[in-house]
Length: 77
Image 1 (cartoon, rainbow, N blue to C red):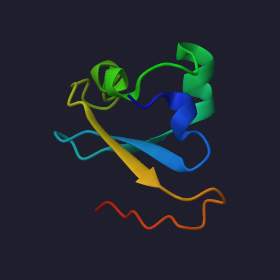
Image 2 (cartoon, one colour):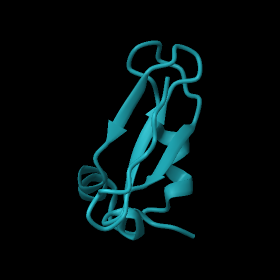
Image 3 (cartoon, rainbow, N blue to C red):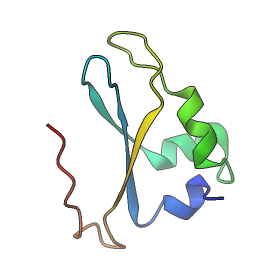
Image 4 (cartoon, rainbow, N blue to C red):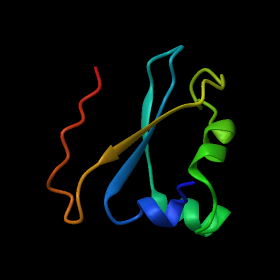
């Protein structure tokens, strides 16, 4: 099972609301401060709520960006 600490150096997280199409980048370090470094990423999906329409869709995008963040190629439209 992947934890927040496992993703910290080479990944970005995005919460996406399927209903209203809002996308928000999540700061892994802030999540680790609030939830703990060993918090499982799979449990994070249940906590996501859109601040625009207040729905829970659980859509979490995990994007590999490499250790220096140069490999990012994710585009959401």
